[in-house]
Length: 147
Image (cartoon, rainbow, N blue to C red; front, side, top):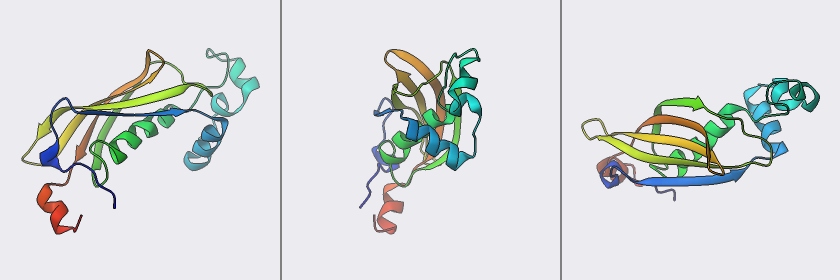
């Protein structure tokens, strides 16, 4: 059984993180799912002629790693994305270990909504920053659903 936090268990300052090393397969799979085959992601010769001087990962691949934290850890299974902002600050490349992190910054009890500061880092460098808003089931809603 999947178990995420119910709204009543959340507190401002709670955080969670997830780390993943970006692989060639990740870029190929993300391109296949998204249908974004931009050569800056897929063609080393083309990408070498860009300002990045080589291939970079899709920005939203890092966004998907943030989604992994939110959907599987904090708040976790049962939470529903309402909004996400991204600011792409630096490129991510094949072989980079991306650590995505989310921290609760605001709770809106009347609607069971939580806001989290989100980011991805490669080593000590922030590569993506943003904010996410999610709807989180209450304890009663979980019990009624048999979770």
